[in-house]
Image 1 (cartoon, helix red, strand yellow):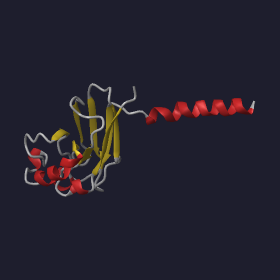
Image 2 (cartoon, helix red, strand yellow):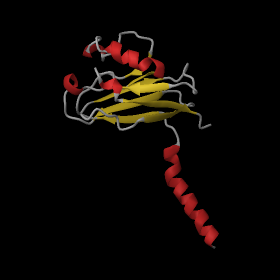
Image 3 (cartoon, helix red, strand yellow):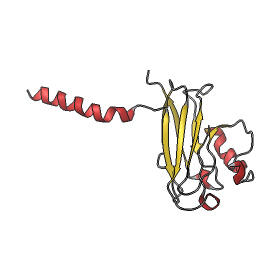
Image 4 (cartoon, helix red, strand yellow):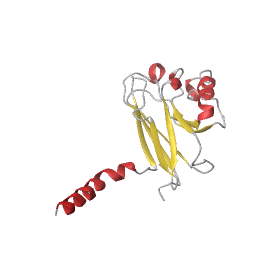
Length: 153
């Protein structure tokens, strides 16, 4: 009887907690006036045809003062992109126009705003090393995280 109760409890817990462990195709991430994303790791399923990232700026400051965006690149490229983007200006979302190192990016938004980007995983290596970051001047050094492609199949 005791073993049966333990097994039932384990199954019940798995029902509630396992779905959170699986990677998704639609990602929500937030950042506020505190220079931090609310996630430092994002996992997406390798089987997704399209990934959609929705960024919400939970702060109150305008984009000119404390703007944020969400940018994805190879880890080897993100610091150079962050540095190069500073001179691109806010209208280019602080990214060099047409730079092929940018895999995906939202526009820069301010407090209370939301931005979204959708992109394909085609051409990305599930074993690759990817970083997401904010390219607003100076933010990329601390507003960054790992982007992982996982195979749940």
